[in-house]
Amino acid sequence: MPPRYPAPDLNELPDDIKSKVLEVQEKAGFVPNVFLALARRPAEWRAFFAYHDALMLKEASGNPNGSLTKGEREMIVTATSAANHCLYCVVAHGAILRIHEKKPLLADQVAVNYRKADISPRQRAMLDFAMKICLRSGEVADADVEALHAHGFDDEDAWDIAAITAFFGLSNRMANFSGMQPNPEFYLMGRVPRPGPTASVS
Image 1: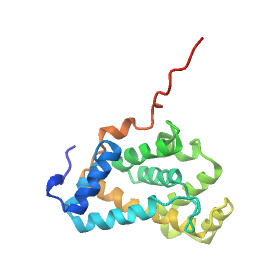
Image 2 (image 1 turned 180 degrees about the vertical axis):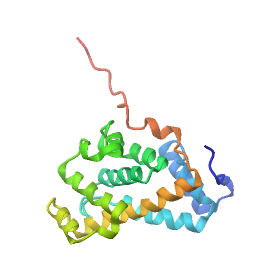
Image 3 (image 1 turned 90 degrees about the vertical axis):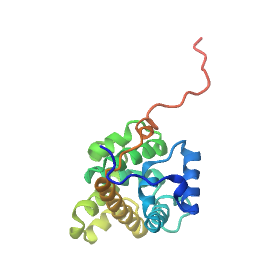
Image 4 (image 1 turned 135 degrees about the horizontal axis):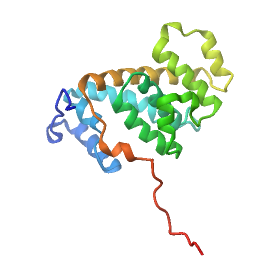
C-alpha cells in the first residue's frame, strides 16, 4: 500500500532535519521511512524526535531516571505496537530489539504473545504494566505500580514504561493513519548472526 502522504524531497528539508536524516543514513545504511514521512511538518518532526530520543536513548547504567535497558525499551515498543496493530513499529522496533538483545526469535515472540516469549519474569511484569497502559489506562491503580516494585522496578521505571507506551501510541496511530510502510531492510536485521572468523573443523 503506498503511503497516503508522499515523503518530501530530502534536499528540500530544513538544514537541521536534513543533517539528522543523513546522519541516520550513514549509521544504518538506509533512511528509516519515519524520518522522511514526518518531515513534511518540520516543527512536529523536531518535537517527535526530541521526545523519542529522551525516552529511548537513555542508558540504564548510572541513570538517575530509571533502570530500563535499551532492549527492554524496545520490548515495550514492540509489544504495545502489536496491540495497536502498527506494522511499521512492530517491524522497525522488532529489528532493533533483536539487535539489542542478540536473540533472533525474540521480537516475533514478544509481538505475538509476550507471555510465552523468552524473557525474564521481571520483563514479563514490565510488559504486563505496559499493556495495561496501552489498552486500559483508565484502570491503572497503585496495585499495578506495586507489582512492578515487587520485581525491582522503581517509580521512575514506571514513569518510563508509561511514557514509552503512550508516546508510541501516538507513533502507532500516525503510522497507521498515514500508511507508513517498514523499510525492507528492517525485516532481516538481527535475524541471522553476522559471520565471524572461519573456524577450524579439524
